[in-house]
Length: 348
Image 1: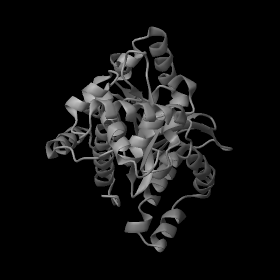
Image 2: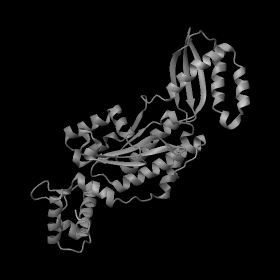
Image 3: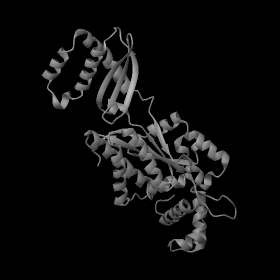
Image 4: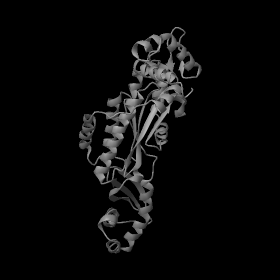
């Protein structure tokens, strides 16, 4: 499309907006009546024919109007999408909701999906926070049997991680308690204690406890950096059935079955390394989602992304509204996390 052909741009923009809100093929008479394009219906028809030749529109039936293609939505997102501020009451309501989950990050994350679904009426998806970017609050070492112990790590966000571990000695409960207390103490070193205090605390451990410590630390690092148990929270999965594009039972089932595949959805969400990413139709690279769009944004701790929030719907989804809602939710969730555990919300 020629850059200087603004009339075609305006007509295409009007068609996309109309189709997003009505899900009905758009004709030249509709455009003439509803939009102040300043040209006749005949001129609009000619321009629509050109847009069809250029791959921006298709005509589903000979007697019907036109509907946008994936190429048209990409054009709209790149050139015409308008992000707007939601009413201040929305952010205030979100903050009020988060106040119920102080110290319970995963519960707050799950609530985020629910709020986002209500704001947009699209399926909301969100990954649990990347534990590698979080801070330890407590470490508990619990004897199981002989050399086997249970390592329990609780983060500042209230997330609990646990795993069994086999030592090469049989520890006592008191030894495990002292090593656990020392590991909990270590996270305070940078801000509250000097290196000398650290050394003196370490010397209070006996040789067996120091040996236990040397074996436990790599196990905890592995536990904290394991991403295989990342959870995907969703809300409004059946919203997809409310869109006329998916009234076909077989197509709707295909999409729902795909969204229930946690590993696949996790990969889709994890592919976003930017603050905002919009994949339209085949850009998702998932055949079953070729009629869908996925909009994702990251939430952060200390300016570092630790999780992804997403919305999925038909390619006809309201991009302006969805991106605006995602902005609010990523900002509010990032602020909640940083306020809760003393980080710096660098992006806000």
